[in-house]
Image 1 (cartoon, rainbow, N blue to C red):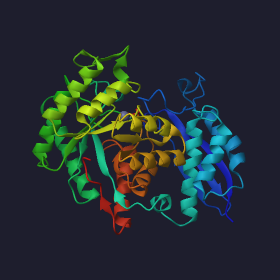
Image 2: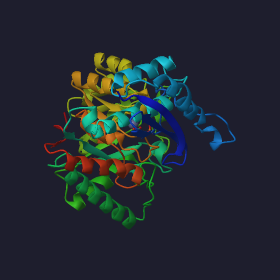
Image 3: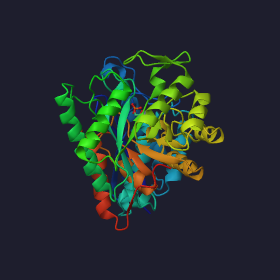
Image 4: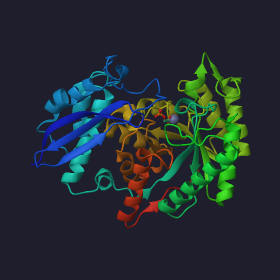
Length: 419
Ligand code: PGA
Ligand code: ZN
């Protein structure tokens, strides 16, 4: 029987030029599975711990050699001789070996690397595509394409972090992607014409200096209309409100300097939903503003997808509370927020069972790894968020989905959207 022979780690660079973890799982049949771990910038308080060396002489303390050593040391020893084909068992061993609530002993970056590299090796050894190995899904996800960057992802004057195109009214993923890419190019011309910067932010969206969220939405609507897709492309926001929440107040410090209460934020979002074709809002409020979230869902939840990212951090404990309190109607799924594939899939299942949507997501610091594309299809999530249609670490995921579309004979595109 094929078993795990060894796990190895390598310190590599992510898309921002900071170090991150690459893991390899080597099986006794000679198969090698590989995975690279992403890294966030607007990380939630309640995420699993990303282990950094703290040695100021290397990468300003951001090195990941301790995590790499954990992979080739304790993790490799614990998994040696075990079957790679039971992901639950592999992840159970990793959880037990770490033993902390937030994976602070071995590091969630080391643990996730091992977890994913084992899945890749098992799929390869079984001669299956990763999406086939991970589940029976056949749904190509609607992409939420981030074409204007702000917040912690860009040095510009916009407080909201992401302005996304949602090309949901198409027959096929490839058609939706083409339309969004056309809008992206039109948007570039438009910004240029208006004398605005066409430089890009961390996720490949443009990062112009615009006076407000409203002006960003206006320019996006114009670009969609100029390209002729008004009836087929809607909009989504990631406010990433935890980033500008302090002492009970939301301060739009990069743009209008407004200081808002929780209900003031809800009113602002409500007014934007009235003016623009917004179908989804992520982190409209801060990560521990549970009362605010409840109010937001009461006011907008029947028509708009309200997505908890920092709120839920892909953690079933926090998601359970959110389901009980009706805090949101959707969850953003980021593998490295929780640290194993099994726990990630558990969070997706819990959301689906509660009639919530689940959006599979990248991080702002990414690599050429495309696991999330396969995960989105395998779990029938129906939506993926993986940045703009430029920068190879973003397009790698879209390109993998284009490939999966050709591999799957009976695929469908998306799920009814909005809910
Ligand atoms: P992050 O941003 O990876 O920097 O956390 C992505 C997001 O907030 O969705
Ligand atoms: Zn977010």
